[in-house]
Length: 486
Image (cartoon, rainbow, N blue to C red):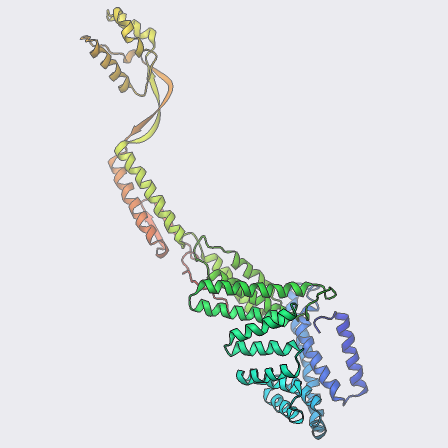
């Protein structure tokens, strides 16, 4: 029914209602109406999806689903009464028996369905509908070996029905025969690449295999299985969006409930793909954001909607808890920064800290005037190399002047400080830091370095006037699992 438009669905409904009006006791029509409204219940959530705002959508969907289900129950009860009133007649009709069994199965009355399938098989042991139904009943009762036997027999009776083979693959999966299940799904896809049931089943199988690998902490295999599962399920969604009138349409169009289930599975897979990666500040958070998008695509009124809403909250929480202070990268950064600054402090203490200062110079004219005053005019040429030269400090200038007078063996003291001028040239001077500053900063940085090794266990760190404190979200413990339910 999902592949039809709203107008076509309403037309089909009207035809069935006209038929039941003409023949109210006609069992085939009663069964058809019961099945029709069960299917309509599954797709009712998409009828007004584009025309209603999100606040009212869930309420509207719930009402439509309830109305369709109540009608389905009404016609099911009517069909059951008609069947029982004419049981002796209908028990000889394998087609009616199988149709009624299918209806009981849809309403989860497995025991009654089983009886009717067996009765139909008693009439015709090779009646494929009854054999297939018996396999479905066995699978629902977790008797997977019996289900496999029944499905194999049904495949022999009808080799063209791929639905039987996908049911067989599902039974193999539940029985733990994953290799056989994969082979069945692959066989169907090789013949019919657009078979929605086989592609979905194979995607779900790979998802389960990924879970098993992750439970064994085999993250590499888990990652491969999850990627394969994602590829198959995304292929199903792409086919769902394709035009059914195209040259290669999908085998069927999925009901809205099935689409939401696939979106939920994709969200689950993305969350697991995140868990297979390294869990720190620099790990790729894109899978979590993709998972959130898939969960947001799950529509109200579908079976997976509530789980999706819960998963969205878990992902938001997971995204918020990965902060700098809770990460290994945060610890490493604190340690490296502390050690780097500590090294600079040691250099500053032993060699001095750099400081930019202006130099001093002795103008030539004033120097020659000084020498003339001291009666040393004959030494002007020997002192000329000191004139106009910039020194980084007064002390350096005095040292150079004294060295020159000593070299010339001048016994008379000459003091050039009175004629020196501030130079335009800048110099880098290294001034040592004080002992108190050195000790306090060294101890503080050592504390920060040690704290870096235990950053994720600390809630507050205070040294002198510097204080670091984690927020409540920083103090959340980081779990390897996001916590999304399957």
